[in-house]
Length: 127
Image 1 (cartoon, rainbow, N blue to C red):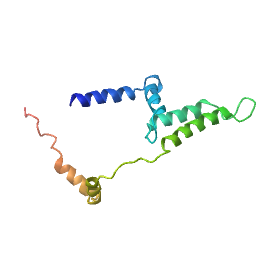
Image 2 (tube, rainbow, N blue to C red):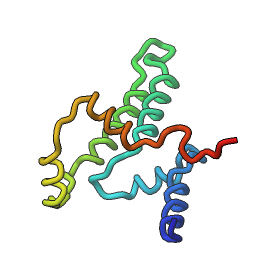
Image 3 (spheres, helix red, strand yellow):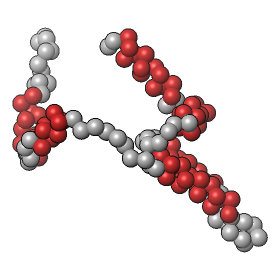
Image 4 (spheres, one colour):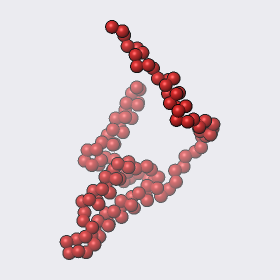
């Protein structure tokens, strides 16, 4: 593995570190211009904590608008993430590759995988 790849992996590991509730990731996302793909695990965790950690109603029976406000902020963040379209230029090489692929049955795919796999005993020295 090249040193550049190792460095990139270290940077990504730092960014996606779960320490302090993904604080580094959250900081980057907060300042990231749209569009971008968020880490679904963090989004779902936030929704779960908001829903499970806050009652639907206050002790006096009124609706808990603070909970609704927290949920609304989460939805607003998701809308911001997708507020612009991804501008990905088409690469004709990949378009051709995808359009020229055969539709194989599951059985055919399994047979191809069997041809490419080494037998379990291959490479093992006999005693």
